Image (tube, rainbow, N blue to C red; front, top):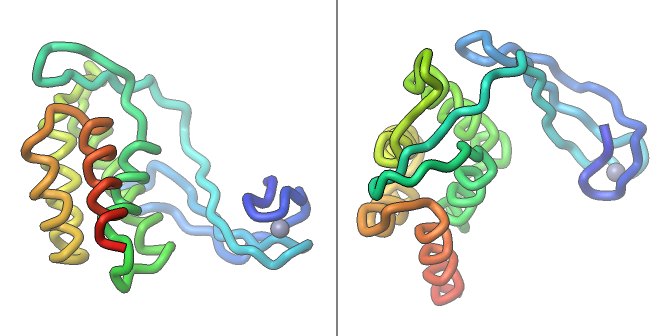
Length: 154
Ligand SMILES: [Zn+2]
């Protein structure tokens, strides 16, 4: 796997774990060139999930948007990279389960799922997410808004 920090492809696996629901393997890796640690996931190729927005529009589910919003919400909180990785993984698994045989889920259900998981981890991050999310119909708008807030806070 290519190191996200230096681009080297030489790494070693430090730890291999199966996620809680057994749908993915998670590997902690260390770059042999620069020592940077990162995580890779291996999973069965799934049908893509469709997100149905409040206004009826549909779009493909994209976990990286959720990850981005979580990073912003947890900024300056005492939350490790590993906790964020686990959180993203847990949320994705819940969303996959909820999307069911049709592989469809509403954007509202996704937002509620993120809130449910964040609540267990950090109350400040939860409030940051909740206070902004509830006003918006989609994650892009939300991410934009919360990034603005984060900039103002600096
Ligand atoms: Zn490296």
